[in-house]
Amino acid sequence: MPGSDKAVVVEGIRKSFGAVEALRGISFEVGSGEVIGLLGPNGAGKTTMVDILSTLTRPDQGRAVVAGHDVVGDPAGVRRSIMLTGQHVALDDMLTGRENLHMFGRLQGLNKSEARARAKDLLDQFDLVSAADRCVNTYSGGMRRRIDIACGLVVRPEVVFLDEPTTGLDPRSRQSVWDLVSQFKDSGIATLLTTQYLEEADSLSDRIIVIDHGKIIAEGTADELKERTGATYCEIVPRHLEDLPAVAKALGSLLPDQNRSALTESADRVAMPAPDGPKTLVQALAQLDAADIELLDIALRRPSLDEVFFALTGDTPAGIDERAAEEGLS
Amino acid sequence: MIDTSVGRVARPAPSTIQQWWVLTTRGITPTLRNGELLTQVAASIMFTIGFYFPLKQFMGVYAQGMSSYAQYLMPLIALQAIAFASVSAAFRSATDSVDGINRRFKSMPIERLTPLAARMSASMYRCTVALVVALLCGHMIGFRFYAGLVNTVGFCVLVLLIGAALSFLGDLIGTASENPEATTHLMMLPQLIFGLLSVGVQPAERFPSWIQGFVRNQPISQFVYALRALAGDSTPGAGAVKWSVVGPAVMWMVALIAIMIPLHVLVSARRR
Image 1 (cartoon, rainbow over the protein chains, first blue to last red):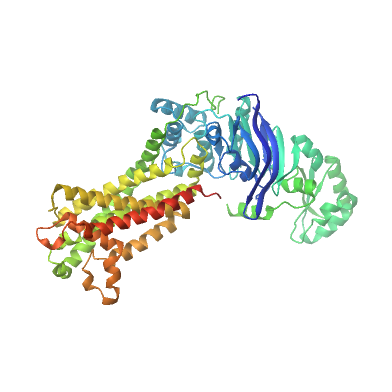
Image 2: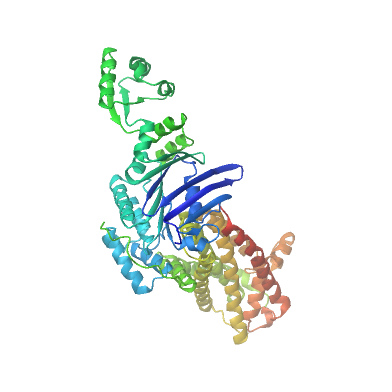
């Protein structure tokens, strides 16, 4: 790529669908070998951003360059340089795992023996040898995701886009996807991954970009963001639901007004930042004990996406209820 | 997983012909093992049995002076087989759209129309199988070609062209709807209505007078007239091969395809 070590350059990208502004002036860069996490709720514009970078959608305004190729001026060049894994596994369900790998190898221009050899390699590396000759519609969710990603690796990509790669996966499969992202990094491949999970963005990314309503609302390393959102949260669940207002009262100044006003009638717990970690928890426990409130659980945990948004915007993110509903269904 | 899964395979330049062929075989391979091919064969046999045996006794009389009811019914047997094949094609393209594999192809170095071309060639394989099975079924009940080699080839080509047009239509509906089940129903119903309200089973005069105009002029009937003439008969009842008989069928197909091409362009260019 002439004169640039940036794998992805995005400048002032805007995109509307009818009256809906999906992206409202997004700019960022990804260095080669860098892993960027695009964090945001459903409807924030993450997938639209990935679609533009993988030439599936044209931006209305702005410029985006992937692996040295402009997404509008040279989409063919972009397509030769990327691998895209969408939210839904995109395979031929009627073919076996091996046949899918072979097909994608051939589509990428490998000859038959190269494609066959590459399929065998990838089946080995993705731990799918025993399932290789079964139709992929019999695979588990984790296996489907693994073969889906493997199909994108029949030839080496310069830039990898992973759109919510771990949604709906069990912890073990999630871990294997995470391991893979580390390998991309070690091989100097730039990775842009979108996620709704702070934990995921945190453990994988060099930098995190938080977007909401089509705009970047925060950008930085995981540590930088956590400083802004409060490193730890303390969650308190009373044994009796009707004690909830009493809990809020007993916590006094420990519970910031923001979190206090966020307590709704349907809430079953109180969550608050714990700036001093365990000390905050001990203090809260002492105050609740003094108020004679029986607890079911009290624990420290990392801030959830809701709380990141809460801290960054003072507002609940768009579509978070929607997302909860979707997760309930799947 | 070990640390070489990324690989060092250099990126070759993909050839469009190779991609087309790979995607075509992708459409064909599963039909050999998921029962689609068997279903196609069974459907043609069932249709032949289901129409020929119950109807030949009391319809045969009205077969417009043709030598046998088999000779009369053959065009509709072939058309039903082709229509059935095009429903399978529609189901496949709808499945591709809903599974997201089309989206993936669009992000790969594949020309925009290659997947469509490959789906069409896989459909032509289905149509060829359908035609062969239908002709075998027809042969069993006594159908024969009488009009010479050129017209026999013409019969086969016309059936395959109709199959291509129907598959193209099915592909359009499937891709646009992104719903395999709905697509199948959408394709089945007109097939049944146009098939039964056609001159394929009985002459137009046997229908109530208010619907005869529709029966006589709707496309399936026009296809039947053309195919019947191309197949010929030992009697003159099949009609002569001339433009006034074959022309309308050809015009219907040209019109159908002319309408569908811009719609296909529209659907494949569509953004979410």
